[in-house]
Every structure is written in C-alpha cells, then in structure tokens.
Length: 180
Image (cartoon, rainbow, N blue to C red):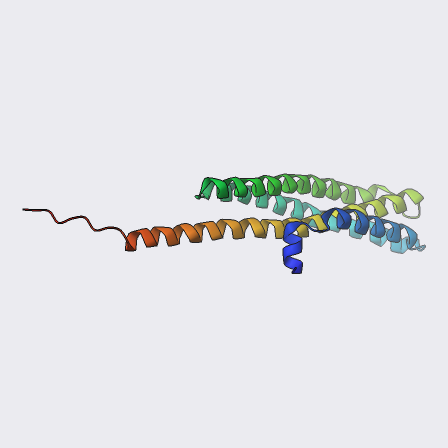
C-alpha cells in the first residue's frame, strides 16, 4: 500500500501522535542546554513558533469550513452520500480537535516567556510545548491527507454525475414526430 493511501486511511495515527511527541518531549528535556543565554534565545524563539501554531489552527478551521461546503455540494446516490457524510463527519471532528490542539499549543508556546531561563520549570514547560507542537503537526499531516481523500471522493462523484448527465443527453430517446 502506498504511503499516501496509508496516511489517508489514518494508519498509525494514534501511535505517531503519541510516540513521536513523547520522544521529542523527552529529548528536549534531556538535552536542554546548560547555557542560560541559549535558553533565553530558545524561550523567545518558541514564542515565534506560537504564531506558526496559531496559523495552523486557522488553517485547520478553514479546512473544517471546506468540509461543510463539500458536503452541501455533493449530489449522488444515497449510499454514496451516506459514505461521503460519514467521512466528512470524521474529518470535521478531527479538524475540530486539531483546532483545539493547535490553539492550546499556541497558548502554551506563547506563555513560555513568563518562565525564567535556567529554571527546571522553564525546561519542563518548553519540553511539554515541543511535544504538543509535534503532536499538532503530526495530526495536521494526517488530517490534510484525510481531507485529500474527502476531496477525491467528492470530485469522483461530481465527475460520475457529469458523465451520467452527458450520457443521458446524448442517448435521450427521440420523441415521435408530431402528425400534422
């Protein structure tokens, strides 16, 4: 199975969003620099990452809005519409969770500036923030591929409907001539 298909199907999502962030949190905590000036630069740098995280939250919300738009435009057989709506509900739910996760991550990263460099609290908070950011990014990658699957589903359905309409137009039975 292709990697793209696996990502669209969510294969390994739970493991990736748990194991990678935990590993990053542990690595960040373990290899936290001893130099306080470097720690200060890191803390202020993570504040900039907070803006990136907030931008991802907005992007996830916009994708959520697109999911609703796609659902409203779908025109197909009831079984296909049911399947499409199921996929859209899952995608929408994950996007909502992602918006919340990125928002919490952004607030956490932005709040790192209240900690003094050289303290264990700053080291712990920064490590946790990096773990949250990693979980957010991994979830975002998975949801983007899931959204791609949803779009493909909608486009395939629209393409099939267009073909059916064209076939109906071309092979429309001729009406009998009027007898005047």
